Image (cartoon, rainbow, N blue to C red):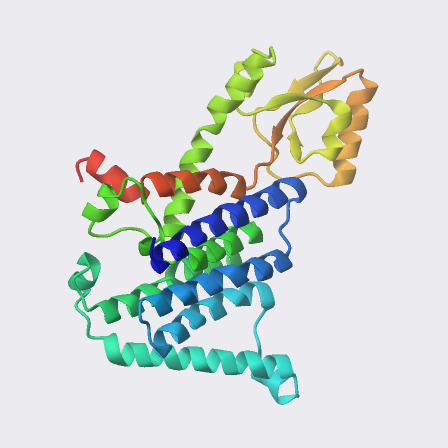
Length: 327
């Protein structure tokens, strides 16, 4: 292997370990601390820098990649302000200098390559230097989309948004991904960025969850009710408080005055507080209930991690699906 291939496989190894670790933290504790992303940004930035240097990228390409990293860092480190810098904050002064040098690189890249032929760029026949710069600056697109989605509360998990930003830095373009069955990517005119492709593939992985739940429930001997076994499971009542689940079983008073246990099909629209959940559990225990139906709270990262395999095997989902649909 040449140096470029070593960098490529180092990126994939970083992606698998880093995203897998983040998925485990999110599943176990329902949060991924900012320090995790700061730590794992190190190898991601190092490999991106090494890749650009191996391709002969000049200072402004490195500065443009730095601008992408700087924008992503705001979701973890916050924004440096001129006000704080003028008050003597050395950290803010250094970060603002970083912003300035990065923007200078972006501006110089625009000056040199703004007149590039877009069709030639998409087909790979453009000047390699221009292609390298445009590919670098295009990495800002998924970061911008997910940052805006997170701040607009369209994406509720901060870890999810930060994970996709980090993935973008690890694999900013398809040239950084060793796709085994690359015929779909190679023949496609327009493909989604790798981070967005991973997000969509994660959605397809999620579609497999009902089948997994049905099989798990059948193996456990739970065959009814059918409206629950495809997304929920039985759990001992005394474990509910310690698990990340929504409680579906509740008490319902019938017109006759009798109190029965009712199992909701859907999770509550609003997650109950710990006190409310404890009250529900105590009421069920008083009625002699020892097992209840619950549905687990699966974080998005749990589905993104296995989706790495689909990215490596097939590439972009749109490049794969569009030909199958005759488009």
